[in-house]
Amino acid sequence: SVVSALPRAVAASAVAAPVAAAAIAATAAAGADASRRRRTMASAGPQLPHHEFEQEVRKAAIAGKHDIELAVFTPREGHDSTVFLLHGLGDTAYGWTDAVVGFYARALPRCRFVLPTAPTVPVTLNMGMHMPSWYDLRGLGDRDAESCDGIEDTRAFLAALVDEEIARGIPASRIVLAGFSQGGACSLYTGLQLGVTLGGILCKSGYLPCAGAVAEAVTDAAKRTPVLMLHGDDDPMVLPSWAEKSRAAIEAMGVESLGFKMYRGLQHSASIDELVDATAWLVERVGDGGAGDGDDDAGGGAGGAKSAL
Image (cartoon, rainbow, N blue to C red; front, side, top):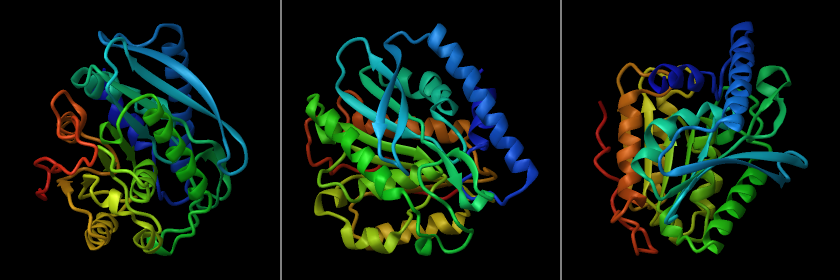
């Protein structure tokens, strides 16, 4: 079921796990599970009343030239919004298809969901082990001081995907960048530097990498993009203090609408409560009659998720 399978798959997306046999085993298990899900979905597809599932492959210059696989859920009728959802380190797009099938797509029948899988590259933090990664991680220290080699390539790739959606006729105010862990970090890093105001940026169990550089590059349009950060207060991998520091950095940039919510007892994973909150926020941002409807500046609020549990 979605409820039982999702936390197990998501928990393997460790953005800053120390090198250990258990971490390597978890990554291998996530990869095996993703391969199983890919085969299942390719042969039968998820049973969704309003969407069709397809797989696409794009060329991207991320850490060299790689084929980037996209898992895409396209509305059968009336496509009027798009959510890009990025997985975390060591995972794939198929670690998050349950969230789309069980929550997001059911609430947003006209929204297109695009889930890319990061290229498999060596990660310095994990002794050079090859795994899906949006940029390199070298240590467990200050996130702002981390070099994040390759993140600019990922930013350019995501910006190009956003441009494609706008070319399709989807207003920027109806597009959301979302992600978990390292994927959430990329969503913040990219969205805050775009020259357009998006419908929103959703960061789950993540942080803002290279915050000093982003503060210098943040655009006036991006400051009007609503941001929502969701995090577990017992996260041992992306520490809650990192999320709090990122929150403060984003506020200091002058972002007009920033939501932030901590979940008591949640580790580096997802919970039903968090998924429900994220779904409600997405509906508010890009659902029928949502805040982004007909509003290219997307200056609306970030929902009711501003409290800390």
